[in-house]
Image 1 (cartoon, rainbow, N blue to C red):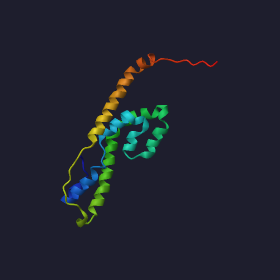
Image 2: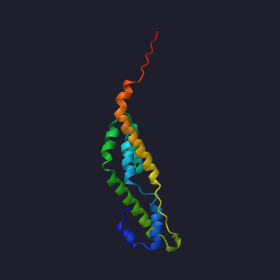
Image 3: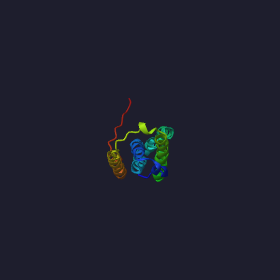
Length: 152
C-alpha cells in the first residue's frame, strides 16, 4: 500500500486512525482491471472508482458493443486511475485526521484485512468463463435448435 508523503508526519494514533479510515475506501488495481475486462461493457470499473456518470453512459450504450471495446482499452489505464483514486482518498483522510483533536482519536491498533480476495476470485472466474465462451461461441450457435413459427 503506497502512502502519501504526509503520512509520515502523523503521530502513531493518528496513523492508526488514518489506516482504519483508509482501508475500506481504497481500491485495488487487480479488481479494477478484472472489472474492466469482465463487466466493462456495463461500466463496472467506472462505478468501482466512484465515477457513476460515466458508468451510466456505459449502461446506456452497452447494447452497441462500443463500451466493451473502450473498457478493454481502459483496462490498461486502470493501474494509473486506481493509484490516482487512492491518492485522492488518502489526501482527504489526511486532512481529516490531521485536524482532529488528539482526544477524539481512538487509540486501538488497526487490524488490516483484505476482503478483496473473494471479489477478485469471483471476477477472475467470471473472466475465464467469458474467454472460454468466446472460443465456443460459433459451435454453440451452429448447434442451436431453430424453431420456425408459421402464421396461417
